[in-house]
Each structure stands twice: as C-alpha cells, then as structure tokens.
Length: 148
Image 1 (tube, rainbow, N blue to C red):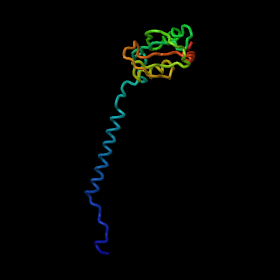
Image 2: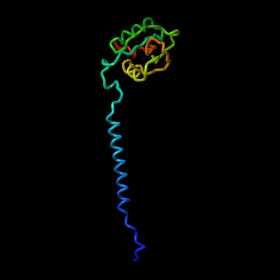
Image 3: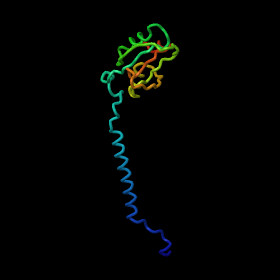
Image 4: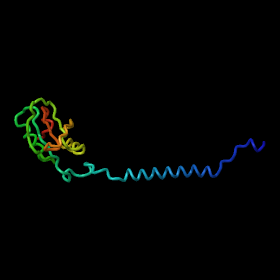
C-alpha cells in the first residue's frame, strides 16, 4: 500500500471551523428565542381586566324595526365596559343578523367589543367624523344577545 492511496486525514482547522459555525448558529437561536419569548405583546386585552381598559364608545341602531329595540339593547349592555353615545334606527329595517360596524375603532377594540356583546359579524365603514368608534346594528336575532 503506497502513501497516495490513503485518504487524507481531516484537517484540525477544518473541524474547528465547523464547530465555530455550529456554536454561532446556536447562540443566534438562543438570543432569538430569548428576544421573542421575553418581549411584551403590546397590551393584550386578555392579560388585563376589562375594568382597567377604557370604555368602548358605540352607537346602538335598531336594524329590524321592533319598537324600542335600540334602547332595550343599550340597557342590556349597560353593565359592560361599553359607553352608548346615542340610539337610532336604520333607514330600512332589513337586518336579520346583528352586526358591528367599525367606524373609527381599531381591531383590538373590535375584539373586545365582540367578546363583550357576543356579536361576531362585523364590517368596516370608516368615518373619522362619526361620533363613536363603533356602531352596533341590532337585527332580528337580538334575543341571542340580550341576556335577561
């Protein structure tokens, strides 16, 4: 057997380079994990009691034509962290399902409002001059959302 047919031994310097790269990648992974797991998630409402958050301003609108429905619904939600700015009726009583209309509120407040009211349907009609962040249009399904 001659010397040229043998496999060369791995160079010690090459092994050190591989281990150095593995160590660097592991350190980056550890730092990233600490950063992402340890940071504050921008005031998630579930972490704080609703009583510590500002009241959500809404306009309650009767969307199905039942007499005094907007005021009955406003009374039903009076114990929640919701400030009813005004009551009204839609021009046409055509709403079978209750819906939240986002007027100038944000998605975080929308989630809070959905949780407090139970109304999951929503749409957006942004109007910076509207007098409340949200409008709740109460539909024919109002009994689902008014708890006695």
